[in-house]
Image (cartoon, rainbow over all chains, first blue to last red; front, side, top):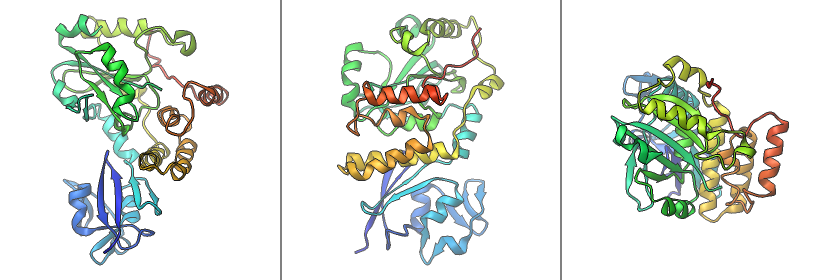
Amino acid sequence: MSPTLTLLHDGRSDEIPVADLANPTIPAEALEETLGWDLQPEGLCRGVICVPVDQSALVRGDVLDLRVLAGALQRPLVTDEKHAVASLGASHHDRGDALNSLEAPDFTLPDLDGNPHSLSDQRGKKVLLVAYASW
Amino acid sequence: MYEELADEGFTVITVGIERSPDDARPWIEKARPQHPSLIDIEHLVPDLYGMINVPTVVWIDEEGRIARPNDASFASNRFKLLTGLDSKRHLRRLRAWVRGEAPALTPSEVRKHQDLPTAADQEARAEFTLAWWLSREGHDDDAEPHYVRAGELAPHDITIRRGSMRTRGLNPMGLAFLKLAIKSVLTRNPLYRPLKDSP
């Protein structure tokens, strides 16, 4: 049985099978379901957007090299081999473009009772978003 | 504040940037807010909005657009001496905007005041996410280098540096914070960054 990598990304985590924890990979068929990208002849695509990628470095049989993938998407990737976990952060280009569009990024978070609430539930109202902490 | 303006098509959403719901529970249960009062244990909102400290407030209009970007503002003047921030000014402006008596910022002003995240900021957040997971799984020793690296990559990110103190056995109200605050003055990396748009 191959080891499993816990991939932390986009505020959630996925368990993905890997052959070698030192060189983490993601099954090609899991790419779209997990990260929302699709490998096409012209590169990695999501909707109408495609980014170029060195396919000879990315594709290894039926798995994709996670470091090459992160690099192509300009997303930071930090790994801990001992505990079989990797953190794939958001690209600063994506975050910057989203903020620059002035559309407030939507999110869904629980209240104390675990009920989910989304920013978009409040469409039609003016909203004061307040981030605070006890520390 | 919320009660006063709730009838005018306005709501507050508070987001506690905490280790667990229990960190925020005493505050929320005491205030018994009528508006959404949410818990963000993954630091998702700081990541999405490029927030680097709390408290941070954002105005969002009826169409879901940012009308006034990240601003440091407290709900009261309890910390004014320490932070130099006057909450009354922000509340006055907010009230006028909600009531339609004064506009928020223009789109170009919003963009001018936005501090967009850098590659290093996002790498710091990825390091923090990994460290946070390791801590939660009980691997504090293995988490520590990732907290340190996150702090080196984004020394101005107080949500990471101070927000992780309790988990790392440091006191966010004690010496560890004092050191952070002194260093922020020496390196001219202010802890609190109010918008410079006010008359």
